[in-house]
Length: 303
Image (cartoon, rainbow, N blue to C red):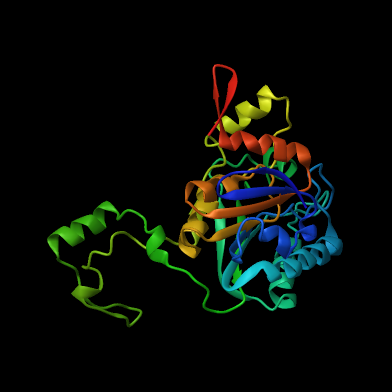
């Protein structure tokens, strides 16, 4: 594949993601990929300009892409894939196509579902507009599914890398060292030592909250300066950052087959991971270079 640009840690390839070869990967490292993190074009019932397919064609295509990419993934590596929601055309009815696609990937590629997540987009605009804003018969659709899959039930993972700050009540418990121990209605027996040990933070849940606003200002300014089209489905950094931290170590390779504006590559770069990205749309690739530059007084300054 053609190299669009490189950084010290990564390579952005221009072309169809199923044209990537082991030889291309070796242009970055002799190692295999530890994490495939991606958000493919959503399975919509009508086509949009960023290249989505629809119906059974979408399922077959996505399964084929994932199956092809398994050759690059380590045996203890992970695939994390976000598939957005879809609605039936002209109806206030959600499509099951996204879930069908995820199930097809799991079953046909012989993968294990380690855990399912949802990304709650706190800044999502109300939609679908016809049913939410106009007729007011549905509520805002503001989350998408993210599935963590792997070749083995026990891929490399460590939730201690993504601990959250303790709540104020937990901080008080740790300080006072007093807890209402005993048997709960669920018949679980809780002793004082269960919750009064300092672990450095709270274990996060599988509901990830992040707004897709704010972080990409430099990218947006770069695209504006060069008259480049913004990618229409950008992801906030918090989502890839969570999985990169939890499922990989410094020096590991992260691969995003549908790079778009290259949020994944930028976050991986900042976390001292190596990265490989592929993207078919050259304009999106050109715009993504703005994530690795600084705009000062109208000039482009490389990092």
